[in-house]
Length: 290
Ligand SMILES: [Zn+2]
Image (cartoon, rainbow, N blue to C red):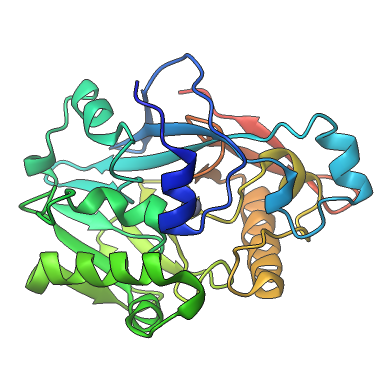
C-alpha cells in the first residue's frame, strides 16, 4: 500500500495529521442492513495525535491517550441495493487506496451509480477527480448538501487549497453534481440528516432496510478514544467547534438510545460499531460483528 504523504495532505486539505502509519488487516468488510449490503472500504490508515484536539492537555486526553497515539483511518462506505451501487465519500485521492480496495471488494468505479458526500474536505472528495482533472466515477451522480456547496463556493482564505478542490470537483462533474436538502431521502433507503459544525453542510446519513438501520456519522469523530470518552472535545479544524459538540452529542445519544450501528470515516477501519452511553456522559464503542 502506498503511504499518504503527510505534507501533501496538510498542504492541500488543512487536515492536521501528525503522522501516518499503515497497519495490517483487511481492506473491505461487508455488513448486512436488512436486505442491503453495507461495505466498509479502507482508503488509508492515519494516526492523528492530540494536537488536532481543542483540549489537547485536558485530563481526559492524558488519561485515554497518554502516548499521543490516535490511530484512525480514512474510510469510505458502499451501500449496495438490489439496483444501485452507492458510494458514501470518495477518500483522499492521490496517495490513498480507495480504488484498489473497491476493486478488492469487486466494485469498479464505472459501476458506481450515486455518490453521497458527507462534506467537502479533501479527504472525502479528493478521490472524485484524477490528478489531471477527470472524473474517477464516470457514471455517478454526486450529491452534496446545499449549505456545504454554498460554503465552499465562497473564498475561504484559511483553506484555499480545499476551496479550489471543491470548485474543481463541481466543475468536473458538471450537471452530474447535485444537491439535496437535509431531511430528504436521497435514495429510497438513505435519508440525509443535518449535522453541522465540522463544516456548515456536514451531513450524516441514516440507512434503513426492513427493521434495521445504520447511521453513517461522517466526521463526528476524529479521535475514537478521546471523543467517545468526552464528546465535548472537538478538533481544531471544525469550522464551528461548539456546534460540532452539540451535533456529536445529539447523534451519539440517539444511536445509543436506539442501539443503531454507526459507521465513521475516521474511526479505525472498518469503523463500524455501536455506542453505549456511560454514566459520565461519554460513550463506549463496541465494534460491530458482521
Ligand atoms: Zn475527514
